[in-house]
Amino acid sequence: MRILVFNCGSSSAKFELIELDEEQSQRGRMIGRGNFERIGEAHSDALLVDGGGVETPIVVAVRDHGEAVLQAISWLERLTGGKGLALDAMAHRIVHGGPRVFGPSILDDTVAAELDAATPFAPLHNPPALAAIRAVKERLPGVPAVVLTDTAFHRELPDHARQYAIPRELANRHGIQRYGFHGIGHAWMMSRYAELTGSDPATLNLITLHLGAGCSATAIRRGKSVDTSMGLTPLEGLMMATRSGDLDPAIVRFLCEREKLSPAGVESILNHHSGLLGVSGVSRDIRDVTAAAAQGNRNAALALEMFCYRVRKYIGQYLAIAGQTEAIIFGGGIGEHADNIRARICAGLEHLGIEFHIELNRAANGREFRFSSDASRIKLEVIPLDEELYIARAAAALLESRPPA
Image (cartoon, rainbow, N blue to C red; front, side, top):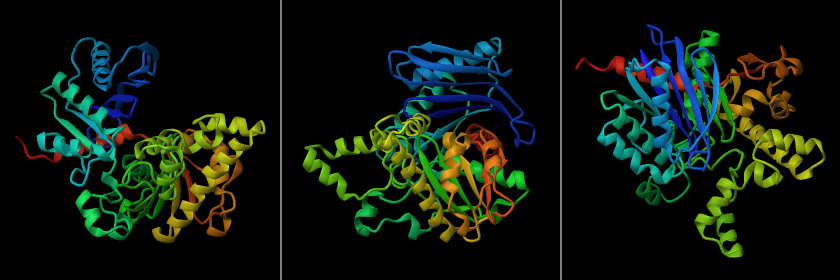
């Protein structure tokens, strides 16, 4: 089965044309993939990779996500020699599905309306993804479109974890609850760990850490998400590249009054100018912050300590609720590649049965690898994310489960 996957961010658009094997369980082969970044700026960067792994960086003018995905399709068509893409389906990642769209779901007018209605909960992410979906649907009208939401993995959170301690009337009227995000990434880490260990996912108690520009932690008990750090929006939880994560909500009113800002102005600060960037004053990139700290920048050093401290704190919370935890899994750009950050997060957790091996941790960067010591009661794993493969598998399973037309 051949699936074209689109994974849109607020200013980026990743795509991959995947041919699954006959059982739809493995990748089979990658025909072509790419990533457009800085969409909407005067010059957008794109990296295109063919099936042989040959990379072609280009600079293009891409006004919006619709243009980006159409350029991706045109490039793939040229890559296949004008023979057509022969698609069985297109599959799209959507950040927020609202209260009724989980997934995977065949895109129709009802699903599209629900995704539009969820836009206030993810105003930076849902609109560009929906624009991409509509552009692709118009370009390839006969190909089924499947959507998979980042909120789906957390859809069965127990009420005591899902609900906020605000009046129920307000919460119900406005749909205020913990939706959780990065669900595709957390689901991938769990499912891949199950494959690697030969385990039934329904037996697994895990803590998964999605650490990148956005960061989140999830407690998994018997194969299901029972708590997660992001909430109504992706702002809550861990400290991130530019997002504050958890803070006293009274800070919003305080800054509105003292800085003469609107609530939207404060929210912009918390989303775009806080986190590693705001504390360090150096960069949103943890590599730059680490380099500045090594040169004696005290704010950069503080940013790193805050980042690692908050991850440690969530690990402790989630050990308390996940049950007898088998493994802690690191994924995402930081989780996969920053051995120094993994070491700082895990240091001092020996009393919780968590011990890492220094050399194994260094060897784990960028690949599937266990870096816990023999003495550790809880396994420590790096599992690089492959959201595109997860999305393609989910789309294939949905299509195969449909009754014949």
